[in-house]
Image 1 (cartoon, rainbow, N blue to C red):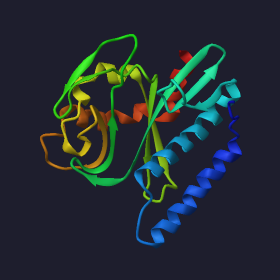
Image 2: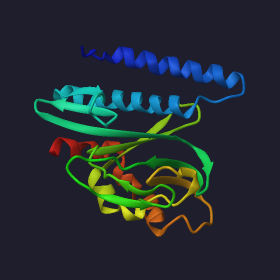
Image 3: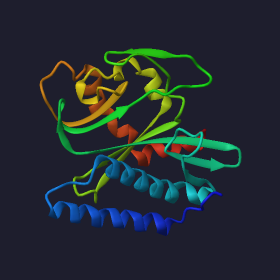
Image 4: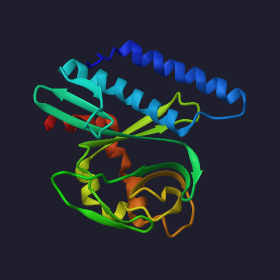
Length: 212
């Protein structure tokens, strides 16, 4: 039985997580990455509901055979959305937001890459049509959304491969630095992406979905 998701229920869970975040801070901790990641999925669901609900799309969380976090459904059309969330933090690349991204096995293709720690990894990016990156403030109350099509990751696959221990299990990574460290692991592609990232802002990019 499929549970129909009501927007007010999503909003209540968002509110509850913010209350939890404040309570956890009082004892000197921060909410776990899992909770922050789930919170990111909730705010993306709410945003997609506002944009695509009036266009007769059903917005569902991925389940069963779906490897995507959120699925947009309209008639026979299914659009798979992968959601990645990061809070502002100090990382190997400097201060900013970092996202670990993995390829996954695909029934249609037999692609693979060689990972420095895991060896041969079979998979590709076919499990999503778009990836939405959620850049969260520390208190979770402010965020920015960036949306990139799968073609972006396929085109730049080799340049996005992970070579850093911070994301040792991930096959790929994407960074949104605010202040860069001097390190050879920050590539020219990373620096170019920083300069051009605004073209992937959600308010510009969501229209791509309606053209599928």
